[in-house]
Length: 336
Image (cartoon, rainbow, N blue to C red):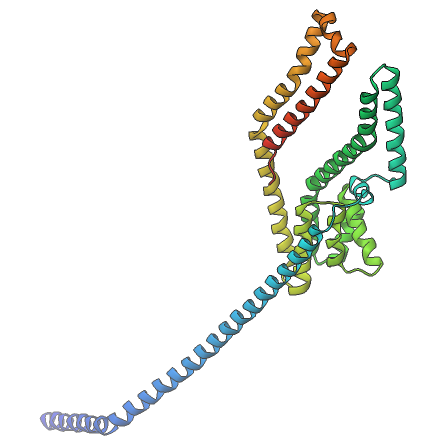
């Protein structure tokens, strides 16, 4: 009985195995066909996904190209405008007085220049100077000295603006990142900034009140502060208004650039201090020697002040000394 059961079980197992093999052989082609179809469907879906990704990437590149072209066109327009402004005549005296931060009119400036010339001319005439020297001092006092003072005040005000401008840009960046619009960020500087940045940003607000937009108002700032850094700021605002973008990032990068430029200027100034000291010593040496000779031998030096030939010698010497100082100054001054 036991042996018969084992034989029956073996026959049943063999029959089942044979049936399974036969079924697999019959269904093999169908299974392979379904697998191939599934693979084809998967590949088609993957290709569709890749096509969508490629199209999205192509659209992004097209958008970036359009935006880059728009920025380039904006830069070309701004550069053309700047060239047109540079081609015009130098700023008149009214604009220079505004740049110097002086609250006087052109008429008052000329009246003060004439008064200074009269005072210096009268003082030199009373001191016994020759008429050509009196005329020269009067002319210099009327035309040269006041303009030199205005130029000095302009340079000092520009330096003060440049020292404070990066800090104002940082305040604007933080304000924009916190959610304030550009108008409120400019108004914040106009109210709480340091001079002369505060005054220039207040002029931007006043220009908006008379109908100008922010890019146009910022572009006018260079008329009051003749600095390339102000031009950079106006270009950044104009590009953001025309092409869009992250304004806080652009202003932050501009602030970094301005600080790097200031560091470079300080480095150049430190490296050129030796040459400047040498130029100062060479320029002061004739006056020092003349003073020492006068202290030791007054009669030997007084002939330059009493004899007309001495006046001529001092005049020619002063002219050539001025030329030498001007040449040395241009040799040791660098623009960054």
